Image (cartoon, rainbow, N blue to C red):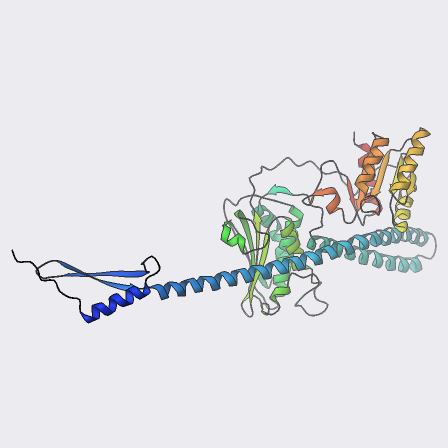
Length: 471
């Protein structure tokens, strides 16, 4: 048997082996790509393969991944900075709304007192003259109503609104609102609605979701002065870990997506980052308050969701809202007590605690002229001392009506002190900014009666009567 002669490697093969050795790592290995070739005929079967050093390619891939991670981290940091900036603006807005609501309550109710007197004078004396005065007073009242709506928008943006979330279907909200939206956008805008079947329920305040839809529809209409298409669609989406990691406040899991798009003029790229700021608007002066998108942002964030916007000039704008899906079952909804009916006249004794002098006086005046006996205190210490003295004299107090945000001791703590002295006393809170004190995640705590400022005489009387009538 002839033994095969041992062949020496050629110079080219030696150069290849040297290059491979030079590329090897400390363990003698190197990254390689191997591509098998077809077998070659000969005395013995031979299989050829092309071996390529892929170290450089892997380095390029790693570098690309590093750049992508850096860009992703940069975008997330920008979003976090924007979220914190908007949160600071929200805190400021909430504080302003609280003080402004006190002032509005005084304006609204004193204007109502004046309107009553003017109406009586018009009936008795020179009707034409007094009717003109009454028309002026009504202008004041309408302006106060508009200011009230603005404060509610500010509170919504700042996520300080007291909400009543229920389990509901977003599709039903859209369908119920369709006719209103058609009237809002006008005949020159075509409305397209695409609703996903079997949409998951969400836990949200129905009134606030309606406000989201109306605000987005009106914004879209204003972006299409010559007409266009407004599209509203819903669907279920599952937010994964990667998507949640790049969006501030968004958590992984099942969500419901609401998307509202228009074929309007679009928003310049340099302004897109400011559209959720309160009072910022791209509309001409006098044509928008700049609170529409800010309100949408605050409502969705308070509901645990996320809002983002995409726009291209000449193409249109799309706002996307994500709301967490819920597996909670819809609870039975109790019929609310009608607050627009003041009910009968009183006779009970009410302790009114309010640190703002004008607010305390106008509230006292309303209650007294409707038959209630009213004790007033400018703060918690005076209220506790007053109750203690009446307890010693065996004189009852039927209801505590107290402001929520007060210096020294807040309303809830005061109520606990008063209940310790008078276990049977009923309590109603009044505030224009009760969110951090009387609520859990924006929801009013069970059993809490809240009179939101600014309130009218009829709302105040209805709330007092309903609270006194509870067992």
